[in-house]
Image (cartoon, rainbow, N blue to C red; front, side):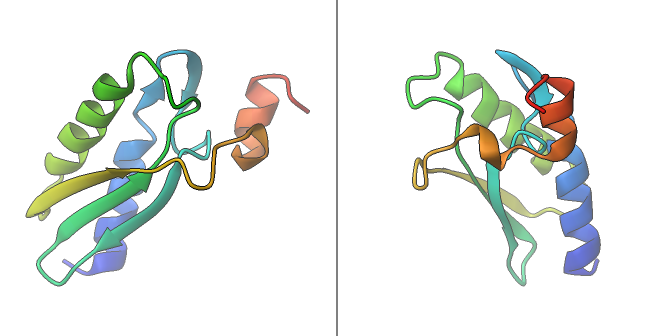
Length: 103
């Protein structure tokens, strides 16, 4: 499977993961900083959380890993959590800002 096709499938899966405190998916919220796929189809998702002390951080990371691992063709998954740069509302998509009334 070509990496661009696999990357699209990973993005699609991440759009089904909602932040429990904000009713918008993590992709539209801008929490996903990057998706890397190596030659062996190991996927690394670099992401952040809306707050470093997020009480459901473990749940979100587990859900991301679980959904990406379920994609056909993915050999392994690593979710890399970072707080650099720190998330802020400007990272949200226009759609998410509209949905949450930030426009």
